[in-house]
Image 1 (cartoon, rainbow, N blue to C red):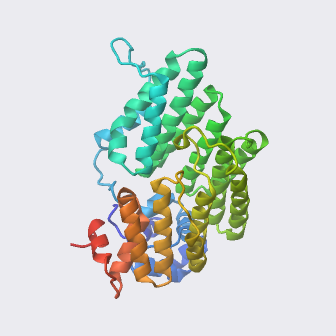
Image 2: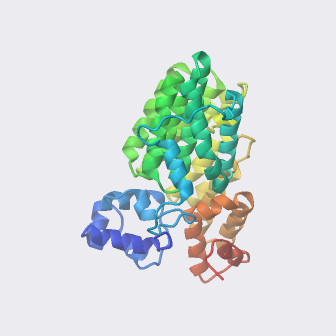
Image 3: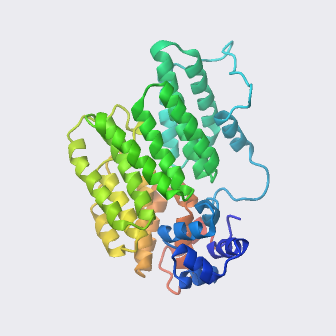
Length: 404
């Protein structure tokens, strides 16, 4: 259940695996004290490398340990109609023909591209309800355009289909449906191949790398990101679009490396990415930044904060965070991650006031994202269970449904 404490899920999964606390600690390479504190609910959360290690020791996906996002509880009921529509758009029924164009209002490729870009705006703003309403139709329109157009328009149709399916994959993963997400991304890569667009295929590899991280397939995630980055570097980093795609892949590889426990290796990769942002700043920007990987000096710094927090380097994380300047290319979802990581760093240092201040910035900037982050709920739960309750904490706890 989504409302279960992390410790309850850990204990249930450990017993299903027929492991003692000591045996799980040994298999995971995690302190038995951490396992005990989590199961005794003296800790509401753990650092991501620790959670990945525990999932590996249990032989489960990370999502099984984390539970569903707060807004998507596992009730045991059938899937809601909105999710069924998304699933059907991503994976049409066998032998189902495309809808007939007769009498239908056909979207121009330009309008279809604009709708997909608007969909990414909704995604980064965490307006998942509205996105869930419109995305199935966008995917169907893109599939129709890819199948019915000719010549260069056919290539453009496949490109649109790839971006629409990428968005479907991201949305599915956010709703805890990682297998559906990977399936959507695999179909997107097929569309990118038909579009003869190597940069789109590389961007999609970045998305698949993230999906693999969610499934605790860290080696697969890093290998895919590095391989795709090498391919982009050989031929496409002379343009802003290509350099941004390459940079996004390098950051994805760094995150996987970090989650695997190699902080130094991850930092080296991030340093390589950060040096490349100097060259990026001198290039003409992409036509529509919403359709290209997020990569800039600010985004690299945000990811470096994330790495430091994951490895318990809270002071270093806060120092890095002070240097972040939000450019127009940084979407609300990335800003949300920074505020969340800053809150985690303050909480780890025992500075409840600092943590609450960062969480309040998160709520003001991206309230939808705050409700969808299990880590945000965990941090507020830890603070609420503590003896010191700074001003503003009760309001945050009420916002997340943790207090009356």
